[in-house]
Length: 126
View (cartoon, helix red, strand yellow):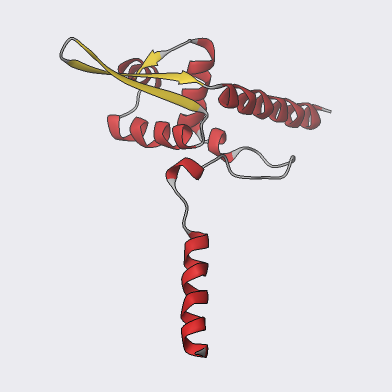
């Protein structure tokens, strides 16, 4: 019976490790650590563009950030998984249209990131 109990224990450990996409949140970090999710250049560009525009289409973001479809998709998906941005897909006639918007969590994360960067700049100048 010890072998059977051992197998059940291993199975339960594997179940604990699994997570669903809905469980994905921004990574936990210390207050002194930069938000790496936002700190990446293209993701910071997406968040910043959405902070000053209520909504932007995929094409608008691609043109504004001068990036490729694949690059924009990957980085927008990371921000969406962290719930920093929202994505709405619809049709304009027969043409698919994807729009992005900044969420409340994304706005808070950006404000925190900007405050952190301002503190770093102030420390360097002093």
